[in-house]
Image (cartoon, rainbow, N blue to C red; front, side, top):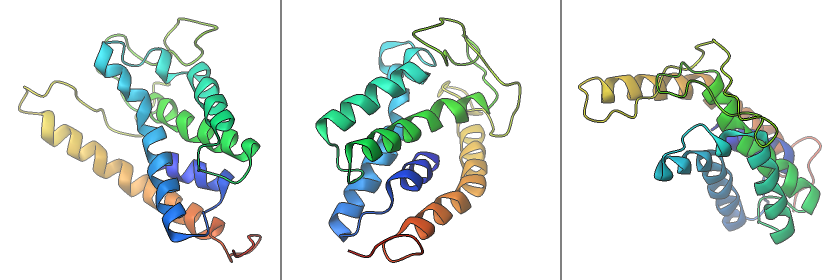
Length: 167
């Protein structure tokens, strides 16, 4: 939801229904993509960084991913959507080593954490009895906090709203 909110805040909502669903799907996927690093065992490292966001946004703008109407808006929407993931991870309690995220890769290999616990921890230890209760509680907390932001971004940036031209 954070990625969708951030992306829509920059890109605006696509005017045609089919394009709107493609835009939503892409922004949500972009927001979840940093966790693909779980597949190769480097969670919270390079993909959770400003550097990764800049690379992915540049590829998206170059290839004209259908999230916005201009290359500049595509770049901003994708970069914003990607960066929500490491930001939210930094605002959650990290329970797995290395603690924190490699936020400033490639300029720094250091891991950073805020020390805040706005969002609950997410467990990757599926074999523990606490896996489902812990994760479902954290997901519910994120939905309660982020759903109003996503709704506002959608409502304020939809075609025909104040400042937006209807297509």
